[in-house]
Length: 136
Image (cartoon, rainbow, N blue to C red; front, side):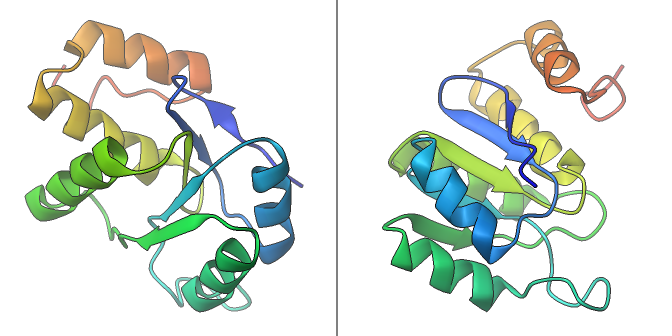
């Protein structure tokens, strides 16, 4: 079951998706998938390779930027680059969507694209509390 949460016109986040959800993402117009979930976090979780294969079959770009705990500066920078260069809209996912939206929000804050208050509001609208992650 899909739970794609709209953040902006360019990015949505989601809890864990499976290969079948990739086709649904493509049908909804997504062009790129970012997987922020490391393989093997829990038994039975779809692997990055399985999601990547489904993405390629659906004509979507795929990037694996696994985040354990909080995102590193390198992961934030990579996310910023991918989102800025990727065909949009982008769907990013992890176990719950939290790591994905935090990584994206930190990239936005670093680039000066949106201020903290706007990012916290966007997170809240998507069902996530970004206030602690964005320093406040």
